[in-house]
Amino acid sequence: MLKIGGLEKASLLDYPGKISAIIFTHGCNLRCPYCHNPELVIEKFNEERSFSEEYVLNFLESRKGKLDALVITGGEPLVQSDLLPFIKKVKDMGFLIKLDSNGTFPDKLNDFIKTGLIDYVAMDVKSPKTEYKYATNSMISGIGEKIEKSIKIIMNSGLDYEFRTTYVKSLHSLESADEIGKMIKGAKNYYIQNFRPGKTIDPTLTRENSFTTRELEQIKEVIEKYVKNVQIR
Image (cartoon, rainbow, N blue to C red; front, side):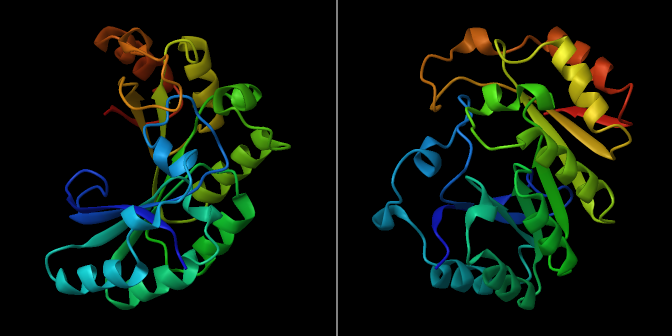
């Protein structure tokens, strides 16, 4: 059974041009210090605070004609073994599917795309590939290569897609932005997200880890050498 740790019943922001609901799946193979969903990543799955597949499907049934899409985010949705059957049920109801992923499961991502059930993919590019283990507190073997493979799969998929990075002082700089730009050269869309302090895996992160508006514009200028549509969220 799919582990769903959160549900947002309506969003105008998460699927470009569409009204969507969002589910937050439990579990992730990364431990990014700036992650805003620690309850989905480092805490044990809480069944009392979770949402069953049946509840979500019934909710979506009640919102036919009012919602366009379901956004599936996490955590990392691709750690869920029951994700694909659930997606098929949602697609059979007539909803578009946007999948958010960290890109560490390229082969699985490719298999999902090949089903024809995914309409939009959003992938987080956390850092330059040489810094991935540090930036994500990960011990995944060959993680940089997995990220590069996922980027290529998405860019060649024919789907609508976006790449995005949350920029955190102490982890990112103009130099790392340039390296990220090279990784996604020729991509359709890239979104710059500023770190915002609050509930995070690393509680020592503060407002001082956020970039100024001017600094974000400088990052944007760097990425625009490689990607046409770059926006600051």
